[in-house]
Each structure stands twice: as C-alpha cells, then as structure tokens.
Image 1 (cartoon, one colour):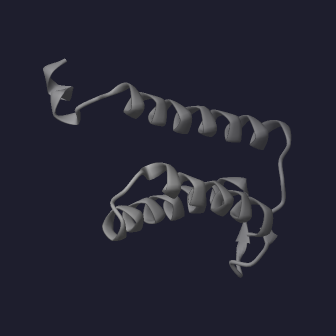
Image 2 (tube, one colour):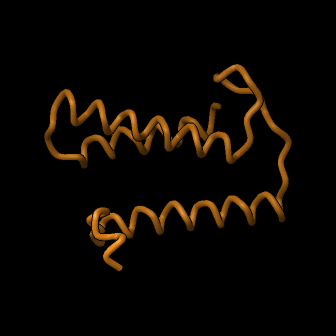
Length: 93
C-alpha cells in the first residue's frame, strides 16, 4: 500500500473517483440498452453522450482551475458554475 502513499487519498478524492466510475458504468449501460445517433449541436460537430460527458468534465476542470487562480475562495461557487455548464453541454452540444 505504500506505493499509493504519494496520492494522498482522502474520502473526498475517493468520492470523486467513485462518481466518475459510476458515471462511466451508467454511460456504458445506456449505450448498450439505449443506443443513440450522434447529434450536431453548438459545438459544430456530431457528439454522443460520452463525448458530451468528456467535454463537461474537461470544461469543469478548467472552470475549477480558473476559479482557484483568479479567486482562490470556496470551491462551492465553482461547483455552482460547473453544474449549469454540464447541463448546457448535455442539452445543447
């Protein structure tokens, strides 16, 4: 277990990675049981659920990084920005 000591695991980190793993399982099951055709949205190229999920995660990471760089305050506010961003990506992208 000492090989993982550098990662500084906390329960918050474990919850985050569990959420990502659960999301990937749900997206996989949706792809199996309810396949979809790629659709073209505001991004200008066809995307699937998985693509929109990836863009949401990537955009949220940038929002958090910018929040920490510019403000450095409570991260709950950055989360409050990321949730509508992810909803918009799934709805319009």
